[in-house]
Image (cartoon, rainbow, N blue to C red; front, top):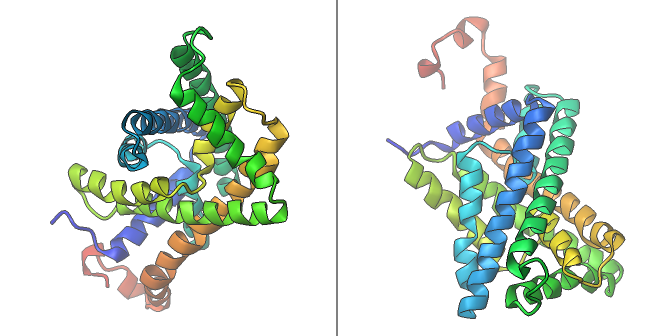
Length: 282
Protein backbone atom coordinates (compact mmCIF):
# COMPACT_ATOMS: atom_id res chain seq x y z
CA UNK A 1 0.00 0.00 0.00
CA UNK A 2 1.15 3.55 -0.69
CA UNK A 3 -0.34 5.05 2.51
CA UNK A 4 2.07 5.46 5.42
CA UNK A 5 0.84 5.26 9.03
CA UNK A 6 1.11 8.33 11.29
CA UNK A 7 3.71 6.61 13.51
CA UNK A 8 5.84 5.88 10.46
CA UNK A 9 5.40 9.49 9.37
CA UNK A 10 6.80 10.73 12.68
CA UNK A 11 9.74 8.34 12.32
CA UNK A 12 10.31 9.86 8.89
CA UNK A 13 10.20 13.32 10.50
CA UNK A 14 12.91 12.30 12.96
CA UNK A 15 15.04 10.76 10.21
CA UNK A 16 14.62 13.78 7.94
CA UNK A 17 15.46 16.16 10.77
CA UNK A 18 18.59 14.18 11.61
CA UNK A 19 19.74 14.10 7.98
CA UNK A 20 19.14 17.83 7.51
CA UNK A 21 20.98 18.71 10.72
CA UNK A 22 24.08 16.85 9.54
CA UNK A 23 24.35 18.38 6.06
CA UNK A 24 27.59 20.30 5.33
CA UNK A 25 27.40 24.06 4.94
CA UNK A 26 28.04 23.83 1.18
CA UNK A 27 24.87 21.81 0.68
CA UNK A 28 22.87 24.09 2.97
CA UNK A 29 23.84 27.15 0.94
CA UNK A 30 23.25 25.55 -2.47
CA UNK A 31 19.98 23.86 -1.56
CA UNK A 32 18.78 26.93 0.33
CA UNK A 33 19.59 29.23 -2.61
CA UNK A 34 17.77 26.99 -5.07
CA UNK A 35 14.71 26.90 -2.80
CA UNK A 36 14.71 30.67 -2.39
CA UNK A 37 14.79 31.15 -6.15
CA UNK A 38 12.14 28.49 -6.79
CA UNK A 39 9.73 30.09 -4.34
CA UNK A 40 10.37 33.33 -6.19
CA UNK A 41 9.34 31.58 -9.41
CA UNK A 42 6.19 30.30 -7.72
CA UNK A 43 5.35 33.74 -6.36
CA UNK A 44 5.70 35.53 -9.69
CA UNK A 45 3.70 32.77 -11.37
CA UNK A 46 0.91 33.31 -8.85
CA UNK A 47 1.02 37.10 -9.26
CA UNK A 48 0.95 36.81 -13.04
CA UNK A 49 -2.03 34.46 -12.93
CA UNK A 50 -3.87 36.78 -10.53
CA UNK A 51 -3.24 39.83 -12.72
CA UNK A 52 -4.29 38.01 -15.88
CA UNK A 53 -7.49 36.53 -14.45
CA UNK A 54 -8.39 39.04 -11.75
CA UNK A 55 -8.79 36.11 -9.35
CA UNK A 56 -6.34 35.66 -6.49
CA UNK A 57 -7.44 32.08 -5.97
CA UNK A 58 -6.02 31.14 -9.38
CA UNK A 59 -2.59 32.28 -8.27
CA UNK A 60 -2.96 30.37 -5.01
CA UNK A 61 -3.83 27.21 -6.95
CA UNK A 62 -0.59 27.49 -8.95
CA UNK A 63 1.88 28.60 -6.27
CA UNK A 64 2.32 25.13 -4.66
CA UNK A 65 4.11 23.91 -7.82
CA UNK A 66 7.30 25.55 -6.56
CA UNK A 67 6.99 23.88 -3.14
CA UNK A 68 6.45 20.48 -4.77
CA UNK A 69 9.64 20.89 -6.83
CA UNK A 70 11.61 21.80 -3.70
CA UNK A 71 10.44 18.77 -1.73
CA UNK A 72 10.78 16.24 -4.56
CA UNK A 73 14.34 17.41 -5.28
CA UNK A 74 15.35 17.16 -1.62
CA UNK A 75 16.25 20.82 -1.32
CA UNK A 76 16.36 22.82 1.92
CA UNK A 77 13.50 25.00 3.13
CA UNK A 78 14.10 26.49 6.55
CA UNK A 79 10.38 26.84 7.26
CA UNK A 80 9.98 23.08 6.93
CA UNK A 81 13.07 22.45 9.05
CA UNK A 82 11.52 24.52 11.85
CA UNK A 83 9.27 21.48 12.45
CA UNK A 84 11.58 18.62 11.50
CA UNK A 85 14.95 19.29 13.10
CA UNK A 86 13.73 20.12 16.66
CA UNK A 87 12.04 16.70 16.77
CA UNK A 88 15.35 15.05 15.89
CA UNK A 89 17.00 17.11 18.64
CA UNK A 90 14.39 15.94 21.17
CA UNK A 91 15.18 12.35 20.17
CA UNK A 92 18.90 13.11 20.65
CA UNK A 93 19.62 12.29 17.02
CA UNK A 94 20.82 15.82 16.32
CA UNK A 95 22.31 18.58 18.44
CA UNK A 96 21.26 22.18 19.03
CA UNK A 97 24.44 23.40 17.34
CA UNK A 98 23.70 21.30 14.26
CA UNK A 99 20.15 22.67 14.18
CA UNK A 100 21.37 26.27 14.40
CA UNK A 101 23.99 25.62 11.71
CA UNK A 102 21.29 24.30 9.39
CA UNK A 103 18.93 27.19 9.97
CA UNK A 104 21.63 29.84 9.59
CA UNK A 105 23.16 28.31 6.46
CA UNK A 106 19.82 27.73 4.77
CA UNK A 107 18.56 31.26 5.56
CA UNK A 108 21.71 32.75 4.01
CA UNK A 109 21.11 30.53 0.98
CA UNK A 110 17.47 31.64 0.76
CA UNK A 111 18.48 35.30 0.77
CA UNK A 112 21.05 34.71 -1.98
CA UNK A 113 18.58 32.78 -4.13
CA UNK A 114 15.66 35.12 -3.50
CA UNK A 115 17.62 38.30 -4.26
CA UNK A 116 19.25 36.75 -7.33
CA UNK A 117 15.89 35.71 -8.75
CA UNK A 118 14.43 39.13 -7.92
CA UNK A 119 17.21 40.84 -9.88
CA UNK A 120 16.89 38.52 -12.88
CA UNK A 121 13.08 38.69 -12.86
CA UNK A 122 13.08 42.50 -12.78
CA UNK A 123 15.46 42.58 -15.76
CA UNK A 124 13.07 40.31 -17.64
CA UNK A 125 9.75 41.93 -16.72
CA UNK A 126 10.90 45.56 -17.08
CA UNK A 127 13.09 44.88 -20.13
CA UNK A 128 16.02 46.50 -18.32
CA UNK A 129 13.89 49.42 -17.19
CA UNK A 130 12.23 50.17 -20.53
CA UNK A 131 8.80 48.95 -19.34
CA UNK A 132 7.51 50.71 -16.22
CA UNK A 133 3.78 50.01 -16.29
CA UNK A 134 3.64 46.24 -15.90
CA UNK A 135 0.74 45.34 -13.57
CA UNK A 136 2.78 42.62 -11.84
CA UNK A 137 5.45 45.11 -10.80
CA UNK A 138 2.74 47.45 -9.49
CA UNK A 139 1.29 44.58 -7.45
CA UNK A 140 4.71 43.72 -6.00
CA UNK A 141 5.33 47.33 -4.94
CA UNK A 142 1.91 47.65 -3.30
CA UNK A 143 2.25 44.29 -1.54
CA UNK A 144 5.75 44.99 -0.24
CA UNK A 145 4.65 48.30 1.27
CA UNK A 146 1.75 46.56 3.00
CA UNK A 147 4.10 43.86 4.32
CA UNK A 148 6.48 46.38 5.91
CA UNK A 149 5.46 49.99 6.43
CA UNK A 150 1.84 48.83 6.61
CA UNK A 151 2.66 46.91 9.79
CA UNK A 152 4.94 49.72 10.96
CA UNK A 153 1.99 52.13 10.91
CA UNK A 154 0.23 49.89 13.45
CA UNK A 155 3.18 49.91 15.85
CA UNK A 156 3.21 47.06 18.38
CA UNK A 157 -0.11 45.82 17.04
CA UNK A 158 1.55 45.44 13.65
CA UNK A 159 4.25 43.19 15.13
CA UNK A 160 1.58 41.04 16.79
CA UNK A 161 -0.37 40.74 13.55
CA UNK A 162 2.65 39.81 11.43
CA UNK A 163 3.79 37.28 14.05
CA UNK A 164 0.37 35.58 14.15
CA UNK A 165 0.13 35.51 10.35
CA UNK A 166 3.59 33.90 10.26
CA UNK A 167 2.54 31.22 12.77
CA UNK A 168 -0.58 30.39 10.77
CA UNK A 169 1.45 30.28 7.57
CA UNK A 170 4.02 27.80 8.79
CA UNK A 171 1.44 25.60 10.44
CA UNK A 172 0.31 24.87 6.89
CA UNK A 173 3.76 24.89 5.26
CA UNK A 174 5.16 22.34 7.70
CA UNK A 175 2.05 20.24 7.22
CA UNK A 176 2.85 20.35 3.51
CA UNK A 177 6.33 18.96 4.17
CA UNK A 178 4.95 16.28 6.48
CA UNK A 179 2.07 15.33 4.17
CA UNK A 180 4.68 14.40 1.56
CA UNK A 181 5.69 11.61 3.97
CA UNK A 182 2.19 10.13 4.18
CA UNK A 183 2.39 8.29 0.86
CA UNK A 184 5.02 6.55 -1.23
CA UNK A 185 3.65 7.47 -4.65
CA UNK A 186 4.84 10.61 -6.43
CA UNK A 187 1.32 11.60 -7.47
CA UNK A 188 0.11 11.08 -3.92
CA UNK A 189 2.92 13.22 -2.53
CA UNK A 190 2.11 16.03 -4.96
CA UNK A 191 -1.59 16.02 -4.06
CA UNK A 192 -0.90 15.80 -0.32
CA UNK A 193 1.58 18.68 -0.40
CA UNK A 194 -0.56 20.88 -2.62
CA UNK A 195 -3.47 21.35 -0.23
CA UNK A 196 -1.77 22.93 2.83
CA UNK A 197 0.35 25.24 0.64
CA UNK A 198 -2.76 26.38 -1.23
CA UNK A 199 -4.44 27.12 2.11
CA UNK A 200 -1.64 29.37 3.37
CA UNK A 201 -1.04 31.27 0.12
CA UNK A 202 -4.71 31.93 -0.63
CA UNK A 203 -5.14 33.67 2.73
CA UNK A 204 -2.11 35.95 2.48
CA UNK A 205 -0.24 34.63 5.50
CA UNK A 206 3.43 35.53 6.01
CA UNK A 207 6.14 33.15 4.73
CA UNK A 208 9.73 34.10 5.52
CA UNK A 209 11.28 32.63 2.38
CA UNK A 210 8.71 34.14 0.01
CA UNK A 211 9.44 37.48 1.65
CA UNK A 212 13.18 37.03 1.01
CA UNK A 213 12.27 37.33 -2.66
CA UNK A 214 9.29 39.64 -2.80
CA UNK A 215 10.50 42.39 -0.45
CA UNK A 216 13.94 42.80 -2.11
CA UNK A 217 12.11 42.78 -5.46
CA UNK A 218 9.81 45.55 -4.28
CA UNK A 219 12.75 47.61 -3.02
CA UNK A 220 14.53 47.19 -6.38
CA UNK A 221 11.35 48.32 -8.14
CA UNK A 222 11.18 51.50 -6.10
CA UNK A 223 8.88 50.72 -3.18
CA UNK A 224 9.18 53.28 -0.39
CA UNK A 225 10.67 50.69 1.96
CA UNK A 226 14.09 50.60 3.64
CA UNK A 227 16.22 47.58 4.54
CA UNK A 228 15.45 48.33 8.20
CA UNK A 229 11.70 48.31 7.44
CA UNK A 230 12.14 44.94 5.76
CA UNK A 231 13.91 43.27 8.68
CA UNK A 232 12.33 44.97 11.69
CA UNK A 233 8.71 44.98 10.56
CA UNK A 234 8.65 41.77 8.55
CA UNK A 235 11.60 39.43 8.18
CA UNK A 236 12.61 38.97 11.82
CA UNK A 237 9.10 38.62 13.30
CA UNK A 238 8.07 36.39 10.39
CA UNK A 239 11.05 34.08 10.90
CA UNK A 240 10.23 33.81 14.60
CA UNK A 241 6.52 33.29 13.94
CA UNK A 242 7.25 30.65 11.30
CA UNK A 243 9.55 28.86 13.74
CA UNK A 244 7.03 28.89 16.60
CA UNK A 245 4.08 27.86 14.43
CA UNK A 246 5.91 25.09 12.61
CA UNK A 247 7.44 23.59 15.73
CA UNK A 248 4.44 23.76 18.08
CA UNK A 249 1.56 22.98 15.74
CA UNK A 250 3.25 20.37 13.54
CA UNK A 251 6.56 18.99 14.82
CA UNK A 252 5.83 18.92 18.56
CA UNK A 253 2.14 18.10 18.27
CA UNK A 254 2.67 15.08 16.01
CA UNK A 255 5.67 13.93 18.05
CA UNK A 256 3.73 13.98 21.31
CA UNK A 257 0.65 12.19 20.03
CA UNK A 258 2.19 9.66 17.64
CA UNK A 259 5.74 9.08 18.80
CA UNK A 260 6.62 10.12 22.32
CA UNK A 261 4.67 7.34 24.04
CA UNK A 262 6.11 4.71 21.72
CA UNK A 263 9.61 6.05 22.24
CA UNK A 264 9.20 5.81 26.02
CA UNK A 265 7.94 2.22 25.80
CA UNK A 266 10.92 1.20 23.65
CA UNK A 267 13.39 2.75 26.10
CA UNK A 268 11.79 0.83 28.97
CA UNK A 269 11.81 -2.57 27.17
CA UNK A 270 14.42 -5.20 28.12
CA UNK A 271 17.43 -5.21 25.81
CA UNK A 272 16.50 -8.66 24.48
CA UNK A 273 13.15 -7.25 23.28
CA UNK A 274 14.65 -4.26 21.48
CA UNK A 275 16.89 -6.67 19.60
CA UNK A 276 13.91 -8.04 17.66
CA UNK A 277 13.79 -7.34 13.91
CA UNK A 278 12.12 -4.05 13.10
CA UNK A 279 9.19 -5.87 11.47
CA UNK A 280 8.32 -7.47 14.85
CA UNK A 281 8.56 -4.35 17.01
CA UNK A 282 5.44 -2.52 18.18
